[in-house]
Image 1 (cartoon, rainbow, N blue to C red):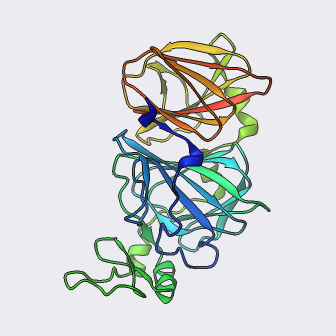
Image 2 (cartoon, rainbow, N blue to C red; image 1 turned 180 degrees about the vertical axis):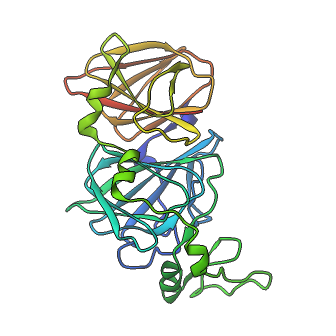
Length: 314
């Protein structure tokens, strides 16, 4: 069972995960691959749980005014803010923006350039769920690739990262060219009101609780299923996975059975987990990959309200 547990303090971050990793505003961050490889361009990225789940889970910590440059994905990218305030900006020029806080969730549409940065005064942390086992490659706005090259970092035509200050371009490879203006125009853009449809703020989540009995509340964020039962989601988007939140102070829920790959990770609190004869705890920021078709019992002890995120393949 230990191989299914990812304790956050044991994770090994990549300090140079992407091509813009030496640029000001991007270099003071760490990327973690918790479940699956994610989209990191670092070939040496450490992956804690490598078995396929149908999605990926990662995390990003960053110092103030640091984060990611403008890029686009072909699969879903959902951000769960663990701590701090984060500015999300989007569009090819990055002029649209919104600031979200601890407990807020935003699901970025595909085929749209987006970036993010820590807008707080202290180090912040966000978790990121990406769709599919292979979430594809990143497309950067041209300015990012051109600026990165000045620091010695570039992408090859197979989207692998190369440090030109240390390595020569392989004879069978070429540098990846930035996309053209015509290609740039093919990417989507959304106004602020449209993006609001992809946001679930923490302050509003309690309005949509489902009573699971025994002191457990369920909030269905994305997808319409939790443990083979259907619920109305707060964000209507086809991501390829379900995202649910369990909320409790002193409750418990027994005999949960998942027939598709599922993970749980604690947003807040210490959770007791029992499967057959195995019993253990996961604390805040820790992740557990649930065995298929096995009875899962969850309980919480304490005085504070606790939150457990659950992601399962659709």
